[in-house]
Image (cartoon, helix red, strand yellow):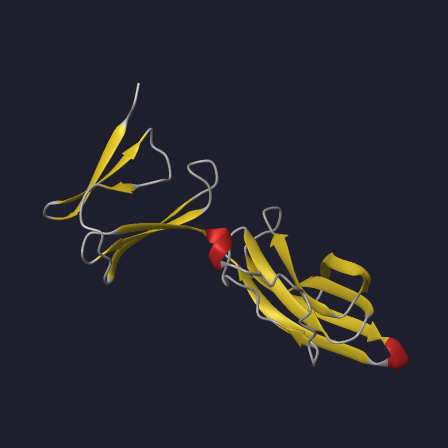
Length: 171
């Protein structure tokens, strides 16, 4: 059984798609023009294609592989300075994200303290390469209140970095 989907972009310009495939066939008017509609078909529903509906009723299909030549997924970003970011969201309940950057390899420790300065939990305690990092902190076992988190990095040549930020847990 064949399925037909009809797409009407402008009066009297009709395109058909049989069996719900990615290949649209124009039934009249071979003209293009400005693009008025744009769609991408995900893999499995006709391959990775881009469809564009044009001003004069044309529907054009092009495989993404013909348009995208490379995707840069490199993690080559190296920070130039130490950084401890403010957690977000803040206030939070029950999870928050803490980001930090280290420009040199080193021993990284991130410790959580309550508002009286008592150590509550160690969030990170390991050697890490230079780069940008994020941790997700789940405080579901803690009481509402103000907390502080401190990063301490012991790098090569005795270089050390320490920074403290405040966070608020609201349940």
